[in-house]
View 1 (spheres, helix red, strand yellow):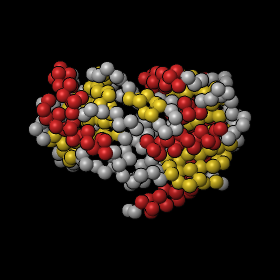
View 2: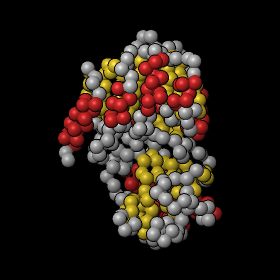
View 3: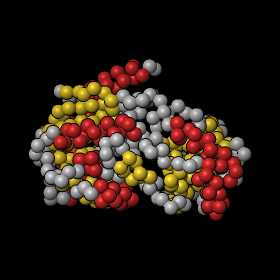
View 4: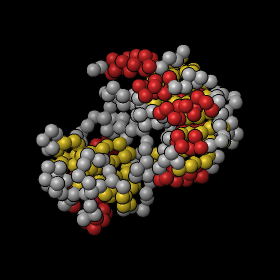
Length: 353
């Protein structure tokens, strides 16, 4: 489907779900080479591993040349595949439940630095990986972080709970064109399209800075602090709330490094809001696909908060949440094509009471 048609379809879908009086021009971004993260299932054999997906017969299909990935990811994946063979890391065989290496997860920063996570069934090959690490770092010069993630269960789960950091550095700096450098830990969430993510943060900052009466902001589902750190100013109190303690630690470290006034709390977003006696001037919500849900929507409706910035990757759940907050009306909205060549997109909406 031509890209122009894709964009028209996404715009029409968003407008059918969100009744905003003003729609800003869609942020399209690049149509190829835009993904900063590769999530590759490992198949094949130790001598000829595949990095990509598994087909219906559970055989590996190699997608190292996928056109969505950045050129840096494509180059690195080829070298990583060669290293897997040299190191003797046996691909996990779903059918026989044999082998060790399940997934290769690779992230690239705007500075061309890389974080590699090797998802393995156990720690049986940890000593081998450690002994071959110098060769990997030499083959892939941009590698900053390398970890083993242990996922022992035989089920379709991308990663496990345990993370073993093998390098000196445990986080990947994401230096954005917006002037903020975020720190990504191994399990941190960051949008897969860096350029469009920068536009997302820029738009939120422009909206909030244009509101004269915003002195306090909550960023719910803040992750590593993307929105919170972009909205922080000397005359504004900003608080980020996120259930992941690792992400909160990373956000706090970034705030200290930037010297900005932003606090962060590790907590469930809904529980925090319902349990607080304070109400900020503005709330940012960036929930997962299921949306914020009835409890948090009910709190927003009853709280008296003046403005909400809602960032959604699912206009269907966004529409359900907006129906539960009738006192908060869309003022402006914008589609951002975070996921070209799919039916998915990000939509950012400014709500006012």
